[in-house]
Image (cartoon, rainbow, N blue to C red; front, side, top):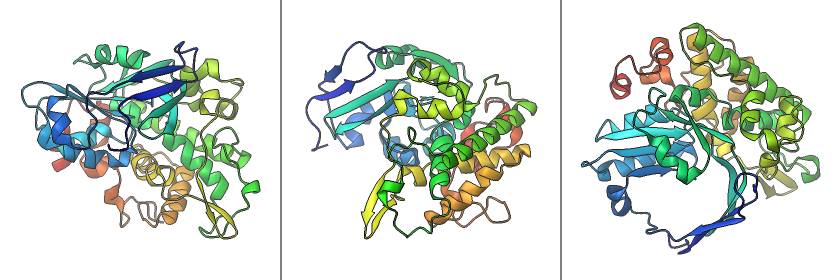
Length: 369
């Protein structure tokens, strides 16, 4: 917090969303001490950190949550089983209501830490996940003046499976580095800089293959009784949010490459002797796998859906980060599997998932089973 400015500002590139180039405010309190801010909070929004930190953040806030009122606790974004993780860590310790944005509200970044942020492109419609998917506690009405977007309802399972970071970063990087030995440097002239705008044909092939498998998983859930009616194809999802910012909507690949909201996102590299290598200690490798692809794989196993591309990416990625989640035999019982969000290991079965998690035991009890 000592690195933060008393006044924070956000520069806005997306004038079609909001016709102002800068927004600023002076926060009432900037602190790293949960005891100073959590007890007074009405809405707690976990944002700006990779979601694999959510368990630790929830543990930190638990002792300080107010017990004299309902408190809303949410995440940007809600993938990675946010509701399952929150109930596991908080164990219904007070009157809280969970929510999350299905996607990040904006493609955004940091210009100067603690002082200036940047909005590159805003979603034109944003789904808000709540338990049961019907927003019984009215969080959307509270968020509308904050987010300034069209907010609609969804549930947490849809958010866990919606095309998001795990649908993009892992296959794009797999297409680039699947044959890399993890050590040898690259000539930077041979590598793309923009992760989306310069997506290679190999990365595009892997991304489209994963897209097909993810849709097959959602179709498997629907066949088993899940009432969700959404179209989970990546092209449909990205056009839903960014159609007026996509210059070529011919297919999935062109939607990614020509999305102006995606244009400024880069692949992180580090200099080494002889060239550059991708930064492995990064959310692209450390978050999207255990909180994304492994979750997809577990649900695919429940639905008996084959996922050869997801399997290949997991086996490749886990080797780079020196973990074992998926075994060569195709089972999710590797040495480090407890680091992942695996619904079957949390006590959830297919009946629970397809019911929306509201017709069976509370999530906290299921996780202790």
